[in-house]
Image (cartoon, rainbow, N blue to C red; front, side, top):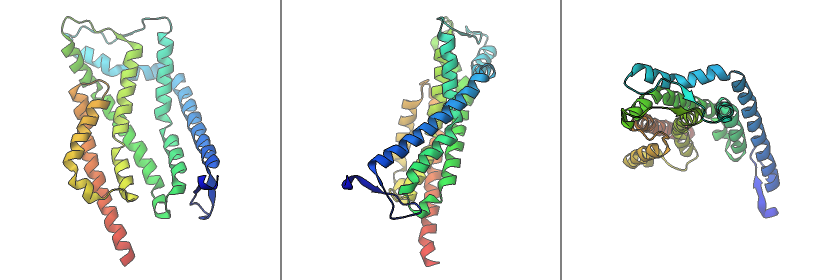
Length: 262
């Protein structure tokens, strides 16, 4: 077991944790995250009706703005338990999103012992930026949802009646929010890799064409609706955020080089 021991750089640099200790701590972090998700899901469950109206609003607005579409903005349950399943799904997805600050904090606290003292100083900025970017990405998904639905309904044909199951519609909205939220976390990952020395800003800047192609391909893959409007709404901001992350890494690199001289 001596070979399976890991060094933990906290208050005591010489302190060591065994593999079992690391697994125990990981379990504690997971349990705390699950408790946060459960509590947030319970709150969403209490306020289910206004949350449901908020989620249906883009679909209802699209149907109201286009009388030529064969839809009335209503959702349908095609089974006796589908309504209950949709309620549980909304609570689960909503609890996951609402508990993101706690989840990110638990993940960071598990990673921090392996970082240097300089890297630990970025704890709060990373948590705040991660939560903010995820929420901005989720907001972008919700804001473009009516445009995506308009494209999908128009391309389905004028003779097609739009009758949506509540479970499938809620799954689409949730996956769109999660896809955009995760996509908007790209700059956090890029900045982190630069700060720990895995890549340099110069390398990332030289590979910007390849990075742009990868971002657009990734956006096409992870966008649940598959429409070009949502893909562009995700790919363009991700590309801009990638360049911003490279700029942040370049500034941090210059400061780190200037610090020893000062």
